[in-house]
Length: 149
Image (cartoon, rainbow, N blue to C red):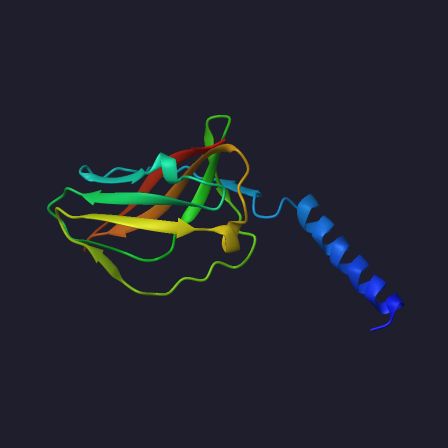
């Protein structure tokens, strides 16, 4: 490739990277989330604070209810701003499988999540992960909070 073409490609790539930086790659706030979370007594989601990084976390769901609960691979991230929770807009379309998973009554499950592809690297702030769990009659939002410094 001749030098002029190489320079043009380099300029286009650099402009695209600058565009991503100015667009706040992965950290745009969406709408305020006002629904109740953690309402099913005995069902908790706890984030391992030591695992929390700009690109992922490890969390444990404890089902100390008498119900077997279903859930999927999907999740969302939220950021707290001035005492309110806002959904983070993913940087890319989030693709998850449509598997129906179960956590039996009395069981715990630990999961590691890496969101770098979907949300990018998150800046410092107070966040939470949000997951939905269901029994045969109701759905419950479960949230676990964490800080990034």
